[in-house]
Structure formats: C-alpha cells, structure tokens
Length: 161
Image 1 (cartoon, helix red, strand yellow):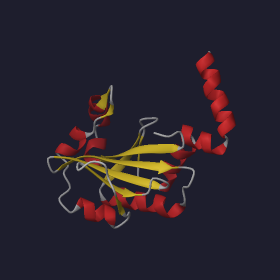
Image 2 (cartoon, helix red, strand yellow):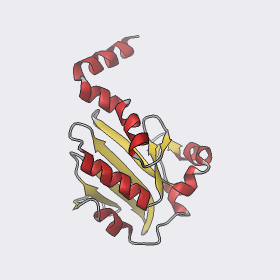
Image 3 (cartoon, helix red, strand yellow):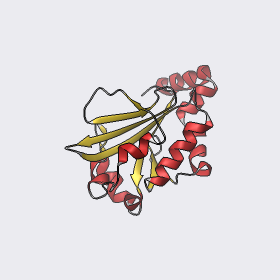
C-alpha cells in the first residue's frame, strides 16, 4: 500500500452486529482475512454487475480477484475462492480523490448492505459521508497528502525514538 492510499474492507452488516468476534478472528500475521465475514453472507444477486454499475471493470493479475475503478481514484477488489465471495476491499487514492467516486463507493456499500471497516484504525463506519470523511481526514494518507515533508519528518522522528 502506498502512503497516500486509504484502505477499507466492506463488512456485511450482519457481521458488524458482533464485530469483535469477527475482527479478532480475521486479523492474521498476513493482514486481514475476511473469508468468514462472507461465507454466510454471499450476495444473492450479481455482485460483479452491481459493482460495475458504479465502477468500470479493469484488468486483474488473478482469476480470483475482480478489479473495478481506478488505481488513481477508487479501486474496488472483489476476492473470490471457488466461485464464492471471500472479500471486498476498497483502496482510495487521496492524491486524486474527487466526490463522484467517493459517492459511488458509499452508494455501492449501502446497496450491498455493508459497513466500512477502516484498516488503519479498525473502526467500523456507516457508508455515509459524515462518518467516512472524518476517518479519511485523520488518516496517515491524508496527513501525507496535506504535507509530505512534515509527515516524513514525523515518521523519522518516531523511528528514532
């Protein structure tokens, strides 16, 4: 992940009812494994079509990852395993963020009946601007985009102490 990127996982609302159970189990040494979030929450409709209503399909390096959007704005990755959804992630490039793709992401998450799991803080937020934007604004990615030199100086200071 680049320092200017803000990462989210879409979390089915049924999982968000008891997040501590699911989040703790999902945290692994390799990152977040969301398969258990989706096993019992398989979309009953065309998920690829639903996402492509908001974001253009783009090339992927894996047959198990379907990618939508843009690396320079909002990128959606749909992870599958044996034909089942095992994760839906969003990566927002804060250098080029404009309202339309952010609004599309909010609409998509609402349509899928998902909340956002913020990777950096592990907060769970509703798919509404009033909850997502403050998470973005206080992120490392936003700090970097506002003032790269100050951000890097802070990182170096923290590493030296």
